[in-house]
Image (cartoon, rainbow, N blue to C red; front, side, top):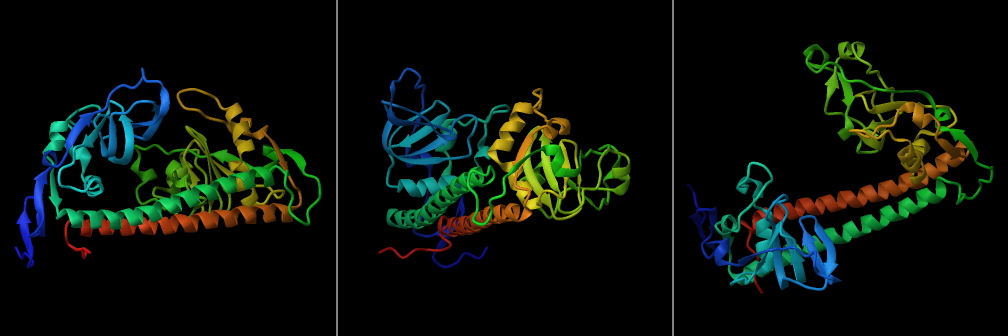
Length: 388
């Protein structure tokens, strides 16, 4: 094996000569979280595997710490500074020895925690298993420099997340104002009218799933087949699944023409998309061909509005899975301007907001990708930072 000058072979692969390999147990101590139910409410955060659960007036640890899932969720280490309490399904770390805490945190993010699972049911980790995990450690000054570089890009990602959240709130407020007629755009004054949902479409129907045991309905299929995961974006431009024409002919699936509304009405209720390609849908997903009284983009936002969602919630059939049939949707009252120019103007404003959010999300995703590459290079010593 060709080992570059200044590097050495270790149990963790090739690392710089001045780095060392140590088990986690030599770098820190691991404490168990515990029950907090008898603690009065306060301002100290109680952390669970998903983040802050509540606040109490007591703490288990004060300082920099890394929380590691003990049971249930074991693959999402959390970093925190300050006073903290953790639940009994989380470990917390303390007594760090000759290491930078933030550097250790970034290292722990690279570990495949599920491969260390010691249970056949609910995923679980023992502290002893964690203590034996080997870490590649540069000199402490370099650890700090690496942690600072990764922390800077985390700061950029967090700032974008905050900005995205703010833009989404602004959009939500705009939808509430514009889609109810509470706020009118300049140049429009005609009164809005009440219709029923059934007035908004020329044709609508659920799809269907061909017999999954008959490969003639699926093999080499060329009809895009919409499933729930395909309805998580505004536009459907491709699908992961396909069925054949024979599959359509032997099921209740049908070809939904381009520029229709795709609406999930079974199990997952309320996802809305616009198909930019002809598609078929499985059961629990409606294809809706808009009528001439409504603009397609306006209808998309109308079905995402809080008012429409409340009406849907009140009409759902509760069972093993919540559902709402088309007949129930048909009776929902809809308020809208008949002037389609006003509909288009409203939809354009909301669409522009969506584009702005999407651009910010794309920028954030680039930073996330950059961070991933930086972690790969910096935490293995492939790239060295100059230490001031």
